[in-house]
Image 1 (cartoon, helix red, strand yellow):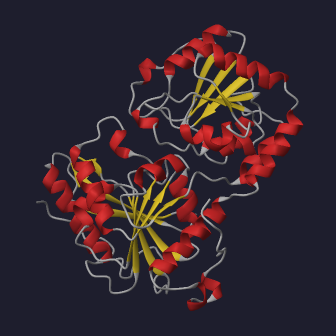
Image 2 (tube, one colour):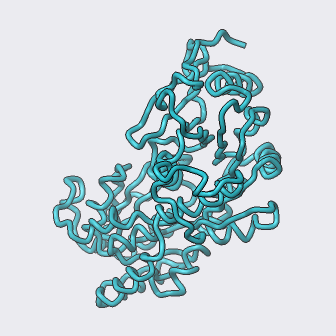
Length: 405
């Protein structure tokens, strides 16, 4: 074991509002807060209205450092803690160091009320002996089906199911797969920040790196990884060399050299959440070219309602949680082959947009991330034996008893 640097103690000198009377919510995440703005950011930025939110990320390894916790605040009102560990540690030492750093930050015993919120079961390996008053598993993906998933992950997920009080799932198909594994499983499919993406409907100026790309423009945004069908993209682009395919997002877990390179495929890299409406405003159609593999079996893409809110008609491969309900309601076109993608896009380009957009707006009006968080919060309070009336109204902005979306 290595000598550890002293970290700021969470009880209670951390950047999260010293002396706060809010309950502490500690999230253990395999996703970086500053990476792509997605489900954890939408939910936990809203949780920060009610809780002191601490995001504990996976460690970063640096040569020659002593183990310490890098703790910093974010504009959304959350605090992010990153374990900084020396290179070359054994797996056992990595777990032990994370455990000790987290225990030093928040304490082993829950002196004050606190909630543990897990995105990754792997965190159970170094947090299972730390006390909490409420344990939640927000199961946004079926991680066991991702490339490189280990037996350890499966075992730790079983341990997390045994410990947690509530399970939230990121989609209906994932709910169906997990509903019999716990007494309290609730489906919360991807929701929408409607006003943010609806800005795209009235924007007219292209971002600089998109301005020179000609129409017809077919766009994708999101993480570029094993879940993307690169062959389908290449085949579709080859069928219509007069169309331009604009691909936005960071490339992770795959070799960038395998990305298809054609004159009409434009890899623009990652963009911030605030920039996305500017890009979508210049697209004629969207393309969700998800591969049909184990990693996509249970996904509920957040970008589906985001495309729709932006007013961009979209073609998707037959992902279950896209077909239900978006394909069934005629909000998204479904295609499996390159030939089908071309035919569907041609249909979208010729179709009058206003009737479709009116149907989109009626559908999206039923949901929002605010409503999703309010429904989750209601379940959390019930699980802790509380009700909204037990807390000051000022501590519950946005609280509602909306049914799970």
